[in-house]
Length: 373
Image 1: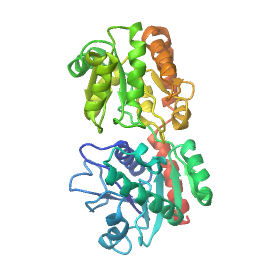
Image 2: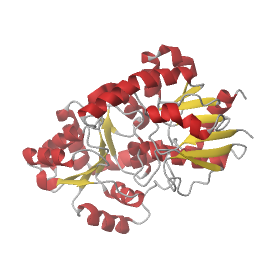
Image 3: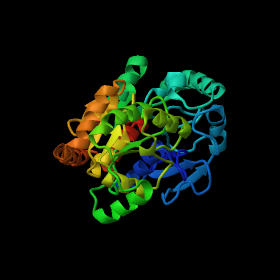
Image 4: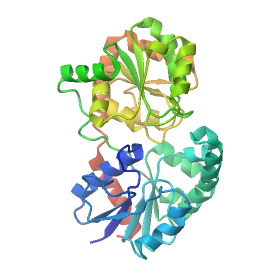
């Protein structure tokens, strides 16, 4: 049986969207393809959680950086598996096996606009990605792009890898579903953010995630629903800046900023929010909007890149660089319950087309290609 090592170093207690991608894909692959020997690479003991791997290897360094690029293969041995799957943009050198690499976006090429790091750190990061990503693209046997928008962007910038690109959309886990106990969800949401109606925004406090732009839009739209609040769940970024902006806009008391929340609390928020506002400037996929649709939460998202691709006709779309446009659509969400019900129903139907079982089947087909099967 062929063995596959999945680089799962984005797993952990405060895992990112890439961590969710890794864990949900692994579970689906294990159920779908018992003929594969599935191994995991994690950073620290216990990061794998409940994932049942045939073998767990550890290397305490981020997937990108010179340590991983140059030293990881020595720690894993000359043949860590028949196939190594990098879940994030770069491949270690000297693996000695077939390789697959997942591309989520091209944000690493945006420099300071795509980073929240201090100046010296983002400069080093940017310089590394400028060299490591193209070099990894050349060496990878197959490339998985998480959306057609990402695949097109990669092919336009790096035409040499066009024939190796395969599009595999994310799925949405069964835990994201319509609310089964509305009173319980409302009680939990009230503990977290209060009982007023609220617009929910998910994602770090960064230029790309555009939380500042959405807050400006909320400040304009709020007149239509004076009791409304804006709730931002931000795993990273400088909270004081968004709080200061809210004060300048006159909506300081209406802003709630939460750090990373549990999946159960996230579902409670999605089940009770007036809508999800997810108007990033660029996204490789936009998993939060899919999770919102699966929960029956109406979605406002951007009219560009993968967000429009994923949402289809199941969301309101706005230009993320046009605050009046975002405000206009947010106002419609706040004022028109009939529109919210219609979007919620469309979202549920749309989300049914995105499953991790389908993602796993397409990913396994890419593995078979890379292995020459």
